Length: 181
Image 1: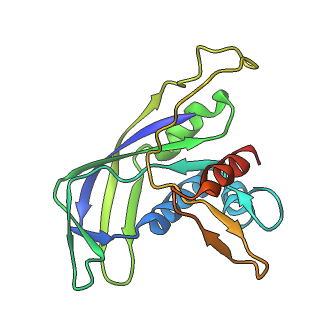
Image 2 (image 1 turned 180 degrees about the vertical axis):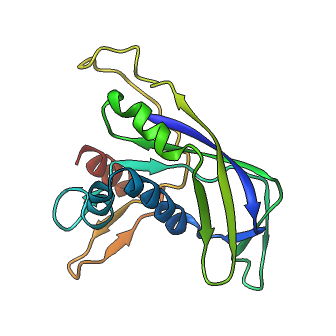
């Protein structure tokens, strides 16, 4: 289930270039308002293996005109009052109205210690399932285009990861392995 979330900027003009964590925190906060136990479960554990829980939601990059600023070129200066992003959940279709209601009229704050911008949710639109015209167990060939950067890595013995370049032969194998898990 995918949604297009359109935002209006309320205050602030700069966000950290690495804004994904604060944005995911804002999404967790919204989910927790609807079901605090579920929001806490997703944030702390998720589904799947003990050591690596899958959150069953993902989001795209924030789509908004910006310029790179800051001494370390680590800030994005927002150049528009409107922004948008997509969020996808692995939930039954019956949850669509619930999810839409959670996001409607919410505030999303993207901040770190140096900068902050706040947005209000202008609208929440359901997006069509691109595989919706296929039967449930039908084998299809698809071409994927990620809406945000993709990271793939291999676990090391010390519990850390060796992150792979897309031209590394193990990159695709790692992505497919994680997708199947």
